[in-house]
Each structure stands twice: as structure tokens, then as C-alpha cells.
Amino acid sequence: MLRATSGWDRKPLEVGECGYEWPPSERWNQHDDLIGRGADLNVATIIDGYRHGLFAMESFDGDGTLLWWSPEQRCVIPLDGMRITRSMRRSARNYHLRINTCFERVMRACAARGDEDNAWITERFIKQYTTLHEMGWAHSIETFNDDGVLVGGLYGVRIKRFFAGESMFHLQRDASKVALMALVDIMRSAGMTLLDAQWQTPHLESLGGIEISRTEYLARLAAATGPRN
Image 1 (tube, one colour):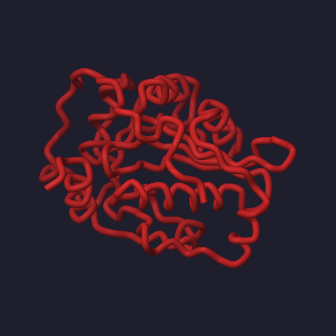
Image 2 (cartoon, one colour):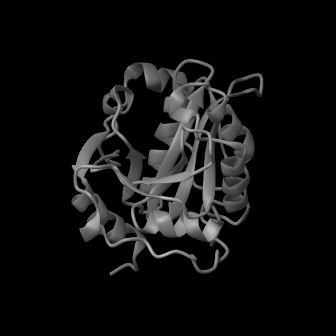
């Protein structure tokens, strides 16, 4: 399995101070995943949002408004609980894995899936997350076939021992699942503790994704992004 290389362990560049103050979690509506609207998509805002358990998507109204989410039931993938089938292990032998060699292509491939779940990956998201990648915060795991064609992958943001999985895609069988297997292996090797998958889906559940309460997620997030004891 792929090990951590190609900038994964690089210390990220400073993003500066966030220009916004998030409402304290005690004031969040416990029956609504939507926490707020507005703000901007500067790199400092994105990273500070993650640190507070929030992630942004554009409004489906098409007006460019940012919506900040923190699911009341959060999907995480336990690093010791991913379900790996025989089919996935066989598929893994047919692919070549790389890290951070074509981050923007992975983002665009995720956006090109064309379903509603990825409609929020707009040009400004691609631009800002590519900037985060160049600064050492955002990473991609890429799956190539024997012909050297990119056929699957995923991307997300790392903050210390936490990884926020944003999206993944596949053009060939199990290609995204193999990338996820690699991510879990790398995270375990790096001593990381929390893999966020946002909302539970039947697909994520089949891979071992579980739901935890927002309160528990925020506690795990604080432990993963804080200093080591």
C-alpha cells in the first residue's frame, strides 16, 4: 500500500487570521445541519471553519452565497473500521497510486460527476482549494490504471491528525475505493485519528462509515487538531 510521500508531511504555510467569528457551538440549532450563511472563501476562512467543525458549500440558488454546515449526525470513517472486500483487494493490484501529483485534475473530475452532491464544486472552490494544496493544506490521492490514465481519486484537507474528506470519483471499478484504502493506510501510518466524511450515505456506510453526534465529533476534532499530549 502507498505510504506518505509527495508533500503529505510537509508543514503547511500560514494562512493568516480568519476575518470572521463563528457563533459558539452552544448556540447552534441542534435540529439543523446549516449553521450560517455568508462569509468568504479565503484560505484562512476555510481552515478556520474546519477547525470549528464547519465546511462550506455554495447555495444551490446560484447566487454564490456560501452555506456553512456542521451535520448534527456526522459521518466519520474509523481508521480501524474500514470495510475492505476481496473485490477491493483484487482491484488494488490493478491500479497505481500517487499522492499530490494532479490535485486540480482530481477536483475537476469530482465536479464533473454531474450529480447534485458535487454541484457545489464551482470554479472558485477549485481555485481556493488548489491554493490550499499549493500551501500544503489540501491533498489528493490518485488512482491510475496501467495505461497511466487517471481513473479515480479523492481530495481533502489535513489539519494535524485530522483529514476532511471532500469528494471522490471513479471512472473504473473500485478506483475511488482503492484511493480511500490508501488514505486510511497513510493516516494510520502518520498517527492521525479522525477521518471526516460529512454526511452518511449508503455508499459510505458500506465502507465502514458510522454516524456520531455533533458534540462527539467536535470533541474528537479538538483532540485531533490540538497539540499532542
